[in-house]
Amino acid sequence: MESINMIEILGYVASVMVAISLMMKDIILLRWLNFVGCALFAAYGYAIDAWPVAGMNAFVAGINIYHLVKIYRSKNAETPVAEAVS
Image (cartoon, rainbow, N blue to C red):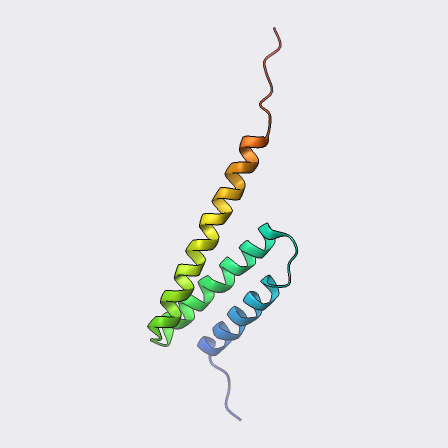
């Protein structure tokens, strides 16, 4: 029986991360898990010289980061700043 190499394991882990991310109700957790899965898939695509896989997943990882930044910035804008008491 052939042993599974590290590149294949990377592909399986990336698949599991993306699948798990799509089951999340919390959008922030979904974005973080999906980002990790896409980043792993981008590395996997690079490792096997599958440039469409690497490029598309790098692009989706960037989209996840963009939305996470928007979410965190909007949360910070909603948090009231404590005013100094005179």
